[in-house]
Image (cartoon, rainbow, N blue to C red; front, side):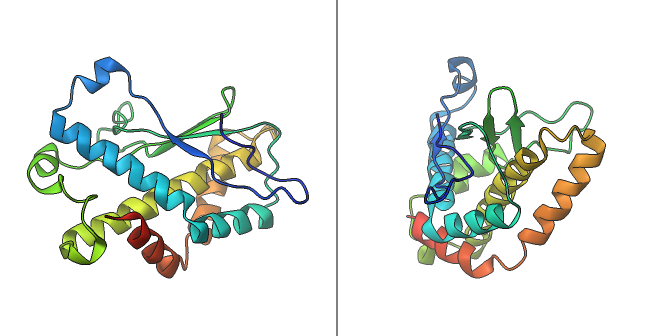
Length: 197
């Protein structure tokens, strides 16, 4: 299980994140190159989230928002993208919070399988400086999406127990996420450079 998110005096939140084990049936659907790419992707996301600058910023936001969490939260980085949301083929699930299991799941963004096999296989293995502009932009998007998704799900934790309907809670969470994701450029760039290669 992850450590408690939230804090008591002297017990600062630390991001305890793990890579989820995909079920064998799901693993069988991907080629060796794709599996390697997505495991590297998940490892990269874990490094970005656990980066000290990122952790400090997230900790500061949780303190400002007074997020109180009663039990440990298991934060897991999923290896493969989620299926499209029912009835919304163009909407992808980036994260979820399971209240009863006290579990946050972060999913990778969807990328063309052809691109992964032919272009993307070395993206997480090379140092940031040697990457093409496209791959640098992609690493930036991956990092920002992972942090924004984690923050989004942590803010849902803040509102649990208040009995708000989801159509009331979701806009509140989105507004806070949008507000707190401003001004991350320097932190993000430093974290993703440290995590790459």
